[in-house]
Length: 347
Image (cartoon, rainbow, N blue to C red):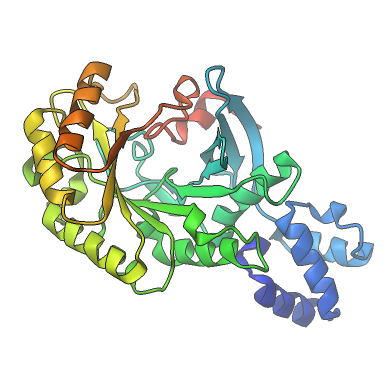
């Protein structure tokens, strides 16, 4: 399958003009339609003969939304996308006063095996192409009636973004291109569980995306209990890589920390976390554990979450307690998966 969203404007112009022997402006028209999420039959300023050829040549303009759930609590929307090969992924749109943030997936499934996350239950099925990641943004933009409906992007859906490094980097370049959707890289956040070599590689590329690190415990021994990646990369190695990222990009690093009852929510856990992040340009984003029925971990209480935040603040750490959004539609952090398709089969 040839996915047109995998091409930037220059690449698509070359492909279309060489294969179909048309003028460059025709290829540019097609590119404009692709960014709007249009199917071939909707490309009304392109000749019918060319549209029929494109449709017959096993090309696709992207991915499609096949179901939407809306939170009755906060208006958060969860989307079920169908990919060209029948696989499905989920994404979430969160609406804030400053704009609309879309959480996108980078893989079908995930192989990182974090004990609190639903995305990894089926393992890794396959990577998404850059165009399939971009297609999620285009599809949601089309729902909002314009290219600027999605203003912010977080790569925090299914999958480990740095485990799909090349496609994710191409997506970032394409979605931020002035000839693409022109979303500022400063409005893009990339989350990783701590793949140190890829973090270091990312810092060398001259991008200005926000790096978010899923830490969840500052003790290597306790972190290994919930995150298998901790068997390969230590907290100190991750912290050093975070410092390098700030030095290269001047972008403050965010540490995500999911509070789990009896695992990482004590006063001592807070002090260990503070010792890791205190002397770097970093912010800690505390998250109450969201329920995943196949998992048996419990969220810390609201009272303990607030205590943990106060411990960090007293230790001089910049920290916030994230507002929970989309929990009632299984659209919160750690809840995205493939199983929604199994429960709601679509022919």
